[in-house]
Length: 361
Image (cartoon, rainbow, N blue to C red; front, side, top):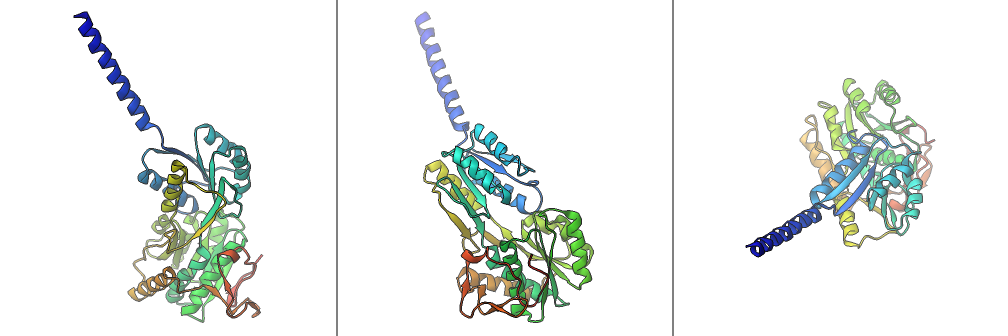
């Protein structure tokens, strides 16, 4: 009897250990991702695009854990990444423009951890850069703006004076002029990625100048869009689909950053051991890294259909945004006839185009 009970107890213990061990293994993260954001994860702009993307990774790949740090300052970036790595992170997403070199320093100390930085230019065996080809595709937003404006004056509010930002504004202007040659594009700079006071003042200045369609390149669009809406003008969004909620009547459309598929692809590669460094990834509409936002109720069908048709032209590789001859504000040809500026030149913009009002600084 005792022998039988001992055997039963041994079987129970063995089965219990197996079940508990299997449950622990099943619950162990397949990958821990560290996400650093310079602002809040729900800003309806830049930061939210990355937060939404890591949530999509968790939906696509079982047992992925994400550590999120919001409002990370440049000075705290390195220590924040080190803390994430101590918690087991093997993929770090330092999603602030100024985080590039702090992340490179941490990457050098942790060769077994992978790093993916948006919008920069450095790369190593465990550090890559990525971004969407927004400069090439902002042309689409310009097409929508050029068709919707009634004053032939449209506005663009920019945070910092970077080549990539000027490329967005220039692409926006070219698209508008393609459908409305009389359009003027007014560019104003806030010299900050996030400063609601300056952003609202910029909106008012553009409204006073007669602009009735306004777009932007800023981290959080809430202040801009609400001010545009209050002024009775139209908004064209950028980055996050969450921006549309701030423009219930004046929303036209937007150019959305869609990182979910790309992040999933790279996260799976880290898990599989196939992830490769020394990359500078740039993708657009055709590759799914950019999307056209839903149109607002005020947008006529003819505008929707035309913008969608142009988008299909981009996907098919039939349209080149920056092909010469293209002149600057002074009428000087800066891109000669037949010359094409592609992704490799998007950081080189230091001038605005003919028909634009503002100053490249």
